[in-house]
Image (cartoon, rainbow, N blue to C red; front, side):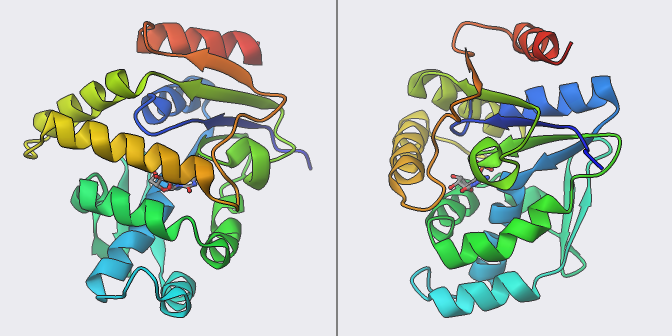
Length: 218
Ligand code: C5P
């Protein structure tokens, strides 16, 4: 059976999460935040004091980890029955996630966990390689981007609102570094799929972006 998928790829902070969640809500479809799978593995790696260069140990941790997702309101994730939701957004988690995401063996283990989200009546999947690798045959593909400066400002605001201490310069550097790593890796690099619609959200509101994606689906 052909279960429809909308993929929304792009760099971190472009608004993929918010936009994808709203579209999934509007359509009554499932939602996959694939970054949170990489972030959960990063937390497992940090918890077990695994060195980010120790591919074998990271692959083992990825195979062994059990994840439970609750996407009903705010995303809540349990790693081996422990609630890790609050730690997902931390910069340390994101940076570690981006390092381990560059390892092909790690991506291979996480592939099926992502594909399992494709269920009726449909799926909105956000990430870096949703339209190019994981859901290559998706019906609708979007590449959502924004300038690094704008993305850093948004991330800063998000963290402050959550009561997490943040520094704008450091976030801008982290975002640029992560972009470089995500684009330069040899396996599943961050690139726009040939058949994806490009949306630059730098000067658009969330509602305007949602409207553009909904027009594609209509
Ligand atoms: O999207 P988010 O910032 O939560 O992702 C954290 C990191 O996980 C990214 O910097 C990226 O390196 C990695 N990632 C990935 N492929 C995905 C989703 C996330 O490599 N589909």
